Image (cartoon, rainbow, N blue to C red; front, side):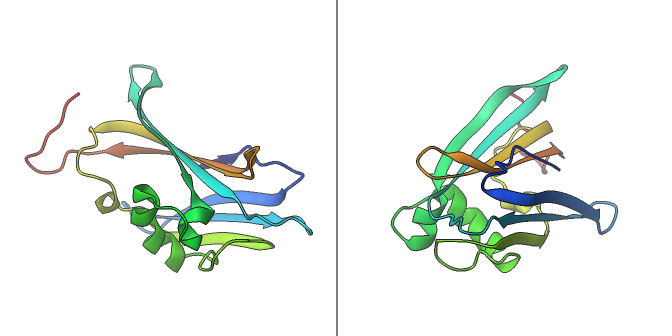
Length: 159
């Protein structure tokens, strides 16, 4: 997991760490601190999913931008955030409605492939989560995750 691209006028001390719990399970931690007098009240989450082909991540499978604060406040709906929200809420201090300020974290978050839809093709993948704030979409944090999707049972999808 790699963190990058945080705006120093909004966020300080942005970091991503991964800890191995055993041979197959990893725990992920994201932390960031909003500067004093900075209120994050219009957060958007953009999620892109790429597959590795030959030497690079080329084929784009999904590119979705969702209004995170709208979902939390109940003014908009999101299929993707509704799947991830129960897991993120239990491992973070983002368990209340917007606005957010101060120290923000997601700790000991374990990504299981049971969370993902079963129709994802097998192979090496890259998941990019870009968290932005405001109408101008100022970058808060960009997280890159690299992983491999293995075949599940009889449903073997080759694209």
